[in-house]
Image (cartoon, rainbow over all chains, first blue to last red; front, side):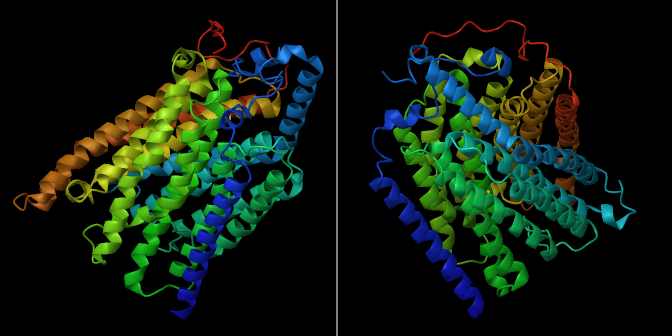
Length: 61
Length: 488
C-alpha cells in the first residue's frame, strides 16, 4: 500500500508540475501572442495560404 | 512581404521549402511507413475478432468449442487490438510525421524508431496471444498480460526520445497547436499506461481502490491519447488541405489547455451508482460537463475553418474522412457529457448505448481521422498517388454507412434496454431477448465496416508494391477537379 501511495503521489506531482511548467513556459515564451502568425505557421513558401494540398499529384505538378 | 502569403515573389524560397519538405517526408518513410503499415494488420485482425464477438452475442454457440475463441477472450482481444494495435500504432506514426513536418526537422534516428515499431508490434502480438490463451489481466482496457508491457514500454521510450528531439530541433517561433496536442499525448499515454498497469496488475492496490484507477486510465486513454492525436491531425490537415489557416487560434489554445487541465477528472463517471465516495463521482460529473468548453472551441474552430470549403469534401478523400471524424468528435463529446449526468446515466449505464458511444469516439472520430491522415501521408512518404479511387470510395461508404448503422441501432436498442431494465416488471431474459434484433443489425453493420477496411488494406498494399510510374492523375473521389477557391 505504501508503494502504491508513493507511486500515485509521484505521478500526481510530476503530472501537475509538468502541466503547470508547460503552461508557464508557453506564457513566457510568446506562445499566446501573435496568434495569427501561429495559425499561419503550418504554411510554407511552396505550400502557401490559398493553395489546397488535398492530393499529391495536383500539388506536385 | 511575408513569403507564406506571396510565394511567387521568391522562387528561391519556394524551392528551398519544397526541398526541405521532401527531405522531411523521405526521412519519415521507413519508421512512419512501418507504424502505419503494421497498424493495418491489427485493424483487420481487430475487425475479425469484433465480428466474432458480435455474432456470439446473438448466437452463443458460434465458435464456442475452442477455449481460445470464447467470448471472454475474443472480446477483450478485440478491444486491446483496436486500441493498442490499430489506433495506437497508427497514432504514433501519424503523430511522428506531423511533428516532424511542423518542427521542420527530419526524423534523425530511423533505426531506433524502426526498432520501436518492431517492439511495439511484438508487444501487441504477445499481448493478444496472452489474452487468447487465457492470461488476460481481467482489467478492462488493460487486458494485455504483464509480459507484453516491457515491449510497449521500451518501444514508447524510443518514440518519446525522437519526439523530444524533433521539438528541440524546431526553428524558433510558435509551437503550432497540433504539436502541443501530439507532444502532450506522447507524454500522457506512457504515464497513464504504466501507472495503471503498475497499480492494477504488477502490485495491485486494495480492491476498493481498483475501479477508480481502472476508469481513470480507461477514460484517459480515450481523452488524453486518441483524442489529442486525432485533434492534432485534424488541426493540421483541415487547414492544410483547404489552404486556409484555422478560424481562431485563440480558441484552439483554450481548447488544448482546458483539455490538459481538466480531462483527467472524467473517468469516475463510469462509477455512477457504484459503492464509491459521492464527492469523487460528483467531481467527475462536473468535469465531464465542463468538457463542453474544449469541445465547443474545437467544433467552432473546425466548422468555421471549413465554411465555404465544404464542397471540397466531394473531391478530397482525406478531407471527407477528417471532416466526418471531426463531426463525430463533437457528437461523441456532447453525448459523453450528457451521459455523465445522473438521471440520464441511470438509463444508459450497463446498456449497449455505452458501446455505441465508445465506438462514436474510437471509430467515428479517431479511426476516421486516422484513415484520412493516412490518405494524406502515404502518397507523400512513397511519392506516388493512391492507385484506385474506386477502392477509396468503397472504403469511405462502407465505413460511413456501416458505422452510422452501428451507432443508430445500438443506441436505439440500448435506450430501450435501459428503460426496460429500470422497470422491475419485465423479466431479465425477456429484456435480453428484446435486444436481439439490434445485436444482429450490429453484426451486419460491423461486417460492412470490415468490408471497408479490406478495401483500404487492398488499396494500401497495391500502392506499396506498385512500382510502375503513376498515371499522373490525382486520385480524387470524382473526375472533376474542383475549381480553385479565391484566396480568403
